[in-house]
Image 1 (tube, one colour):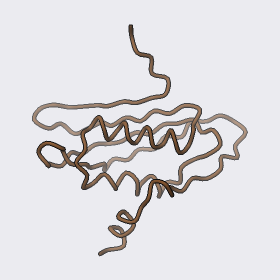
Image 2: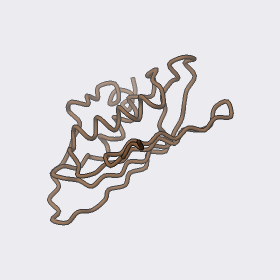
Image 3: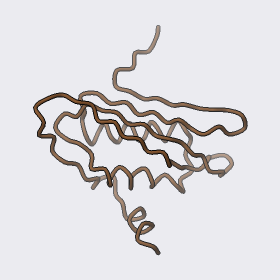
Length: 127
């Protein structure tokens, strides 16, 4: 097993590395992950996406290698577009307790269908 495969296999979301946010000011962290991959739960075919993370940290920030490893754990999982983005959102929201967070999954078209999934903490559901 190669070292990257080993790191991904051994990654534990419970032990995801986070760092203290010592900044006095509010600021936005933007992270782009252009090589997201998961497998369609129905067909098993791979789905590819660019993941856009934005958040205003509270007391913690995610370590960049940790987010890379976490995102790569989806590579061989059978999970829908919607479920994968919601899981990433919920995991980061729980681990970081940010002041605000948004996670967008911009999935490559498949079968002439382009899907964008967005979860954010300030989402207002229309009545």
